[in-house]
Amino acid sequence: MTDIHAESAIGLISTRSFPAMVGTADMMLKSAAVTLVGYEKIGSGYCTAVIRGRFADVRLAVAAGAEVAAQMDELISQSVIPRPLANLDAILPISTRLLAQVHGKSRLSNLAIGLLETRGFPPMVGAMDAMLKCSDVHVAGYEKTGSGLCTAIIRGTVSNVTFALDAGMAAAERIGELKSIMVVPRPLEDLERTLPTADCWLEQVLVIPEQPLVLPLRLPQTVNAPLVEVEVVEVEPVRLGEKLSLAEKSSIEL
Image 1 (cartoon, rainbow, N blue to C red):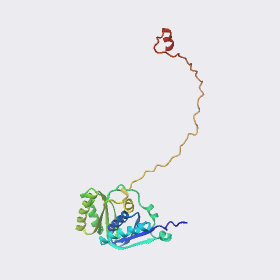
Image 2: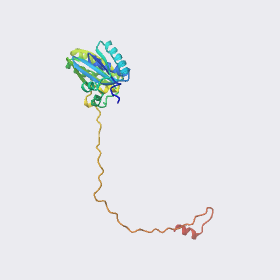
Image 3: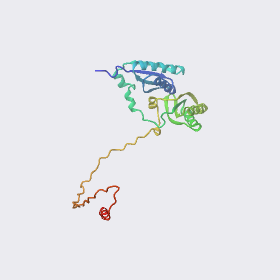
């Protein structure tokens, strides 16, 4: 019997901030055929992106993601675990079964993602207000990662998100401390599925329950009406080009 975990591997990258983790996860998804299972927050702003796939794909994705995190100076650690046993899947949040627990499709799908991280809740709220008032964007939600770090998540076109982040940075620095920002121009479905999204943006699927066909208890009885005989009149065919007599015309009319 073939083990379902024999050809799978786990990839993990830990960063110092939530926006850096999202950017790292985006790079991993776009560099190899892997699945983003989710992310794990352990406090102090540390976030870990978890991916699954074949060993070669996971190793390639982790290498690309770690390079991006290192360029942002946010990389903490990275790891590739080949052939994890079922016990590891059952205990840790690394299994693909967690994909069934994430939210459904959002009305903000296929839009660019902007993330702005602050230290403290008031700077994030002020940044949200400034971004909404200066550009055509929507606040999809927010995330708290410990040590006072809060991340606002906005959606919109790339140009609108970029313009909104500029205004949000100014507002956050005026109120408190700005930590980091990130723009994801074309997020994939796996990334959108795992990001926090407010319930007001989720599409509600209307389910109409199936109702059984109810037949009447008493069917109406048919009335036995007498049959009416219809007299069939035979009409001789008319030959073209010939004139009909008055008697023939009257017989045809009858």
